[in-house]
Length: 94
Figure: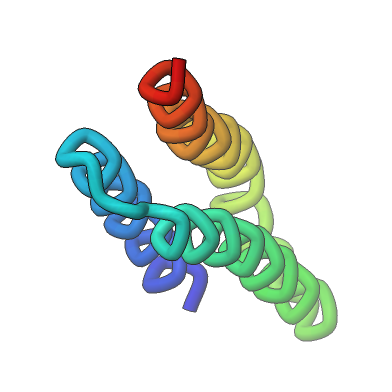
């Protein structure tokens, strides 16, 4: 589930930038992107919790070290990409 949500967050961030650069309202995609990013992190955390409940320690050792760093990078990129559209809008109003 977290993979689908993550892909949706990336696609909506790209649509956010495209709409911003074309001068159209991108606020809808900005909200969708940040929401899907938050849901991705929640879904990944839920996956880890389920693995703990099922005592799948091997699965946790395989997934958690890499994915925790990946989620940090994706969340930071999501914030930056969606922040770019705010900056572009501010610069256009001046």
